[in-house]
Length: 368
Ligand code: 13P
Ligand code: 13P
Ligand code: MG
Ligand code: MG
Ligand code: MG
Image 1 (cartoon, helix red, strand yellow):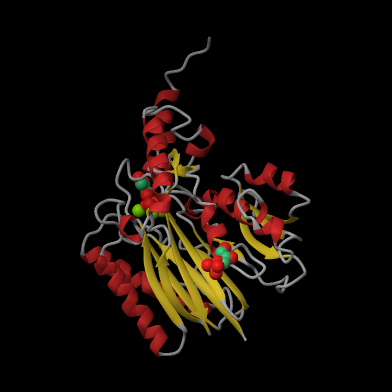
Image 2: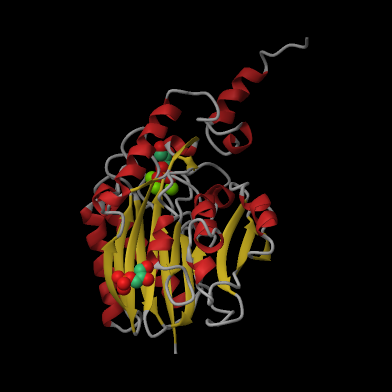
């Protein structure tokens, strides 16, 4: 029997500003999911936060895009929003863009990463939760895990990984997707996913071999808030699920992909480039210039759908060097102030509050 792991997430309000999700909100979410567990709708759950984003991790047997599961998440966010309003948190209900639930949270504001698969003899699953960035922030680490032999030794030395993987890549401007193979198409894949504001890895599948080729091994949330809202309402702080071991990258190979704090878009007002910093759960809050962008990693084993864990995978001196480097880069980027490439290029500023400022200046221009 197949198990589905779902992460459904939303920003329902921050303390203070966009810093973090307070304990009071986490408690409301836990209580709500506990009820769903008691009634047998879900097998298990964990509630975590990436900065000001509330992340619901659920296991169940309802498959992906289940109305039942999405309703549980939506109603949990509604209860959390009520609490957020009571506490007058900043941006209470920020990511709940629809007034009423209509069968599926997609297109309603929350981000979704879920996959259904046959639970193996041993099933390590890692959840990566980011704040102050966008879905394309996962392109580089996911590519490195599943396609870069300088990151993942198994691609070279493990016969069960040697064939490579299939990447499902979305053009989130045009709502189109393409399936591409590694290693044979890596240059073409990079040609797309290097443009990370438009082309985003949605899923990774194994090729025919040890694992069923129709069951994903990684999935990333790709919701674009401004596309739904028609204006800037915060970045689309993304999440990802990655399965590991036995024909897949080892846990340490998956985590290794975050040892380089690459530049991502987001940070202050969703309008700046900065390094993504892997942090322990206790540092999952965004402070300096509302950042820098952060990622936490929660490691689980599945036991018949039950979640064993999490292990706080970046809570380790092994990532101190990465954090130090991230802060050097953060400092370097910050010194650019309002200048590109710290500030995002004009195309990406289209849905922020900048056009309002530029409009005022437009009439003062004269021909030369
Ligand atoms: P252990 O010898 O600690 O089980 O590690 C095996 C392994 O493959 C580590 O990558
Ligand atoms: P969030 O997307 O995390 O809500 O942040 C919005 C923002 O404007 C930060 O400065
Ligand atoms: Mg926020
Ligand atoms: Mg956020
Ligand atoms: Mg956001």
